[in-house]
Length: 383
Image 1 (cartoon, rainbow, N blue to C red):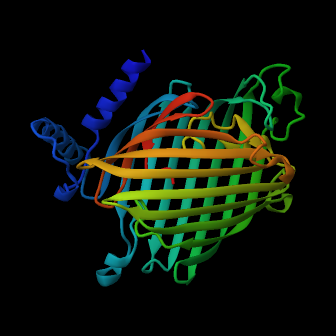
Image 2 (cartoon, helix red, strand yellow):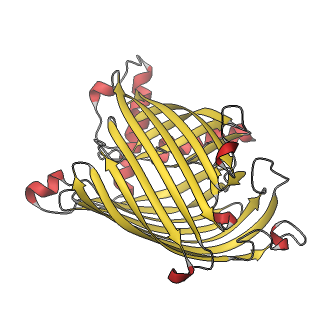
Image 3 (cartoon, rainbow, N blue to C red):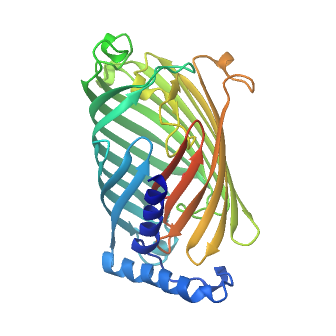
């Protein structure tokens, strides 16, 4: 059954999702099979024309991850640039994705996000809003996980970031985050029902923070060289309307190397540290489609986390690419919990990428293994 499902998703991925104009120098010699492959990819090209207008791309959203199971919905995506004339060409592309998703785990997810580059990349604004009805699992806190217990939560999330360029590639700006959770279903007598865990009776978070970004990527959707480093700090406090008081620091370092013909190596080191009374929903986590693919999201969570990831990206045929990736990570309550011989967990896998437009936006399928085999189907690169 799993093999049939995997084949179905790959077939949908190839037939139902489109591509931009082709680059002849990225093709490989497939001999007689090239005719069939050309027809197959040509069908994808025609599909995008049917699903798109001059300014919007409409994508049937078919997703999969261990946390959600199969998800079905739709996504409308607009890629645009601000400014005019010379400034128009030099300003990075902005994006506006709108997504609705319903999963076989009975999760409902509605999101909208605006990433806006302005004034020839001298300022950047990001706004995201999300509403979810989200049955999920909780496996405790720390490295000694217990049998997962289900719970269900409705939550609303909003954040607003603004950054201003202060030097070449260097951006600084404030950020605001708000989140409210209603845990409407818990296991009677379970861990969350005891109310001894912060956030188990719901939460309301409101906080202000600051971020410093050093961004020298050559492309925001598909970088081939450069760096992206971010240092962010958030403070949630009753003064801002939050019912939990805590601070959180996140350090995210990424480096991109161009190697060989159209091949890219990527490395990431991400550290998250918290202080204060942190609700379990906001603890540092490993797992999911972004951090440590192959581990269930939130299976390991604690005050602090360190995650290292690497990818090798290379072309296969026309707009189809592949990715080989690996990762290692740890969570802990204090700094002494970290070390090579202290609960270091590893994962790895392979993935496929299919280019959607000239800006470099990709659809992706990842097959990973960590503490379980898993595959993910979604949009955009992980790092």
